[in-house]
Image 1 (cartoon, rainbow, N blue to C red):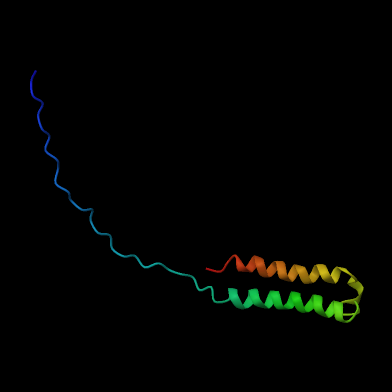
Image 2: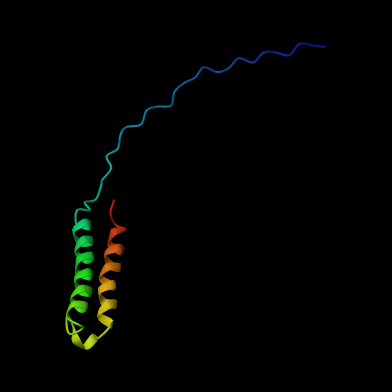
Length: 84
């Protein structure tokens, strides 16, 4: 039976190094203050509604004031998705 040939492995050549590209990070400094402001406004809206027995912040909304307060809080969570 004939002997098989031994293959020579190619020498390792490292891949060429890439130049570091500058990554432009957009400024997201507005996210945290707006998020916290929405949380605080929503919480304050609900607390004022309960403390004043529904006469404030907007009397004509009635119990929908709770929905408005939770809407501000939900908007705060929505803004928080932009935080990086």
